[in-house]
Length: 304
Image (cartoon, rainbow, N blue to C red):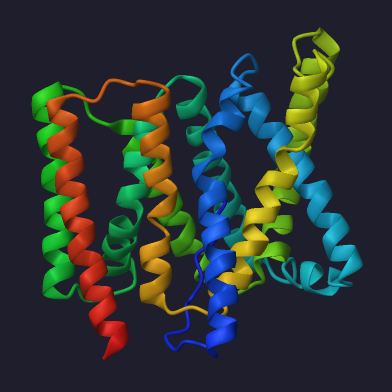
């Protein structure tokens, strides 16, 4: 998906600004939620190549935005020290890994795993904050993490398989947020930094595929357009998200963010008819229960 971790403001803005922020946030999370049909339409293209196009065309689109906004100075400052370069190199590895897992989940008919991963993501953030930032878990947060862990454990016991894809997606994006917390930068400029770091590899893969005739670009009109617009659909929701997050409280964003995995869940079960067994129902029930605890705790703290 490509959502950055930001330190959120706890106070609402003016009512009109909050309404606009709500619309922007809902549009962003809704867009991320309806990504499955887009990438499903590219299932004839290998996941690494789809990722390469997403990186390349995101970088091109963001470069235009940064040029129009005259913000290349911010971009240059991101490379001002070895520490900064190291942080962005790590964040780049994590976000592109997350994108690859997501694309792989969609094109291999595992949207349900993607949904589970993003439902788990807020709880993974809480856990990582406790482990690496010394943030103490409040009682309801601790119970929420424990209940989510129970859900995963029950799924492993009942099905006999570790939901590695969901866990990989949740922890790769949670770790991405943890790293990006160390480098405060605008989402647009930050994503341009990250995509430009991996751009040589992406361009090389696209070129190699084109050279040996196995690439998706030019295969047919629909596939070519879908690959070319992969950058736009990556960047636009990010911009909406950035606008929304300026006006809304943490608790509000915490509720809206569940639009994304909910839509993914509905696509997986109702449209793609992926297997949803009793074991999945129990596991998702535990996850949803844990999220109810988490959201309640967050809302209570934000309203205090």
